[in-house]
Amino acid sequence: MKIDILLGLQWGDEGKGKVVDVLTSRYDVIARFQGGPNAGHSLEFNGIRHVLHIIPSGIFHKEKMNVIGNGVVIDPVIFEEEILALEKMGCKPTENLRISKRAHLILPTHRLLDAAYESKKGDRKIGSTLKGIGPTYTDKTARTGLRICDLESPAFESKYRQLIKAHKEILDQYHFDYSDKLPEMDRQWRASLAKLRQFPFIDGEYEIHDALQQGRSVLAEGAQGTMLDLEFGAYPFVTSSNTIAAGAFTGLGLDPHFAGRVFGIVKAYCTRVGSGPFPTELFDETGQRLRELGFEYGATTGRPRRCGWLDLVALKYAVMVNGVTDIALTKADVMSGFDTINVCTAYRVNGELTDHVPTDPDIPVEPVYTTLPGWKEDISKCTHYDELPESFKAYIRYIEEQTHTTVSIVSVGPDRNATIFRN
Image (tube, rainbow, N blue to C red; front, side, top):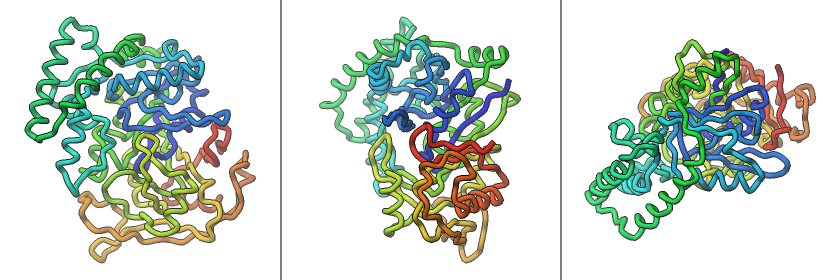
């Protein structure tokens, strides 16, 4: 068996949660391979909207196994909140959720460090979610972090205290006052460990490998988006993990020969949360219209998302670095009603046209647009590709021609049923 990968091709918030939920029926195992509670995967069914941060988006299918991989960082407090919300709905996540022993823990002081670092950056702020993600991955790289397996160690308490002490020393150097916050954060964090310990801790790399050898199908679920990848995004305005397809193999402990299909999720337009370059960003009524119609507010932070036209330069780059085999086009219903639609097909950099994404985020980029006809029809009730307006199908064909990749899934609404499969 091969492992299929699903990930975002823009700056995150592309609708990965919904597509994973829709595809879950085709797989036996759903495994998150990177990121943490900075992710917000929204799913909607039966008229109810659900937001997951750490837990894989296949959790609502009780017969499917869900795995939090070693590349994920876990905050026990947020994890407990998610589990309690699922249990209130009648779900029994202890029956179909497993956690890799190699996954790292987000400590209370990681969140404080996140705030201290962000405050110090001034006008070069990353736009962090302040969930402690960056400092946790920093400790992971520095080989000082705590992992899920440490919860089973008799030395856990001393390791925990030692790391908290080291974090306090850094916070003191930043003159960051934590005295009134840390005691309660520590109490809550320790209390939440009881819920975390109810779940099986597994050697994820062995279990996923065995599942594949047994002929079971696996879908790897990514968080954030390609343009936020630590290596290939607009550094330093990126997240702290590898969001691209290659990250699925390090984030789950598999070798590349298991690679199967790569589903790339892309909105019919672009959005971004946080700081950093965004060439097609709209600051006018059109940008505000997209924000309101698409309800473009962060699922994790609630912050308004920056909105803009589809950027094909960035999209082709994302398709290239991920080896995308299938595109899932989401939020197409939000685009209904425009007379014309602009699509960025090149950048003008220092007066010259280019179809390459600049490595330096400080280089001024001017988008060069191609204008396409829009569509007025409400497509949210369409259930087959043939029902879609001709101008929308022309938009899809244009994306396929430019990216040399098939758009095989089209989402025309937030509900899991508002999904059209072409193949």
